[in-house]
Image (cartoon, rainbow, N blue to C red; front, side):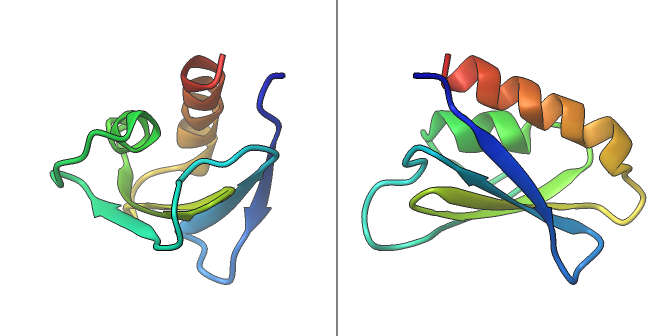
Length: 89
């Protein structure tokens, strides 16, 4: 089954929330990572590699992605969708 994502806006214009139909992050605790933080989580690595992504926060079946103020969602979102397609193919 391929992953389904639902992109939602947040009150912060520099952040979006992505809900999915699959577990992204195992366990009861959240994952919060910034550019340059070490991780072995494939989704986190790929999202943080996107130019303009500043940090991510995830737990279970969602992830919130925050961008730098000068980055554009029009540029970032297609790359985020590609990441989900590749990581959860």
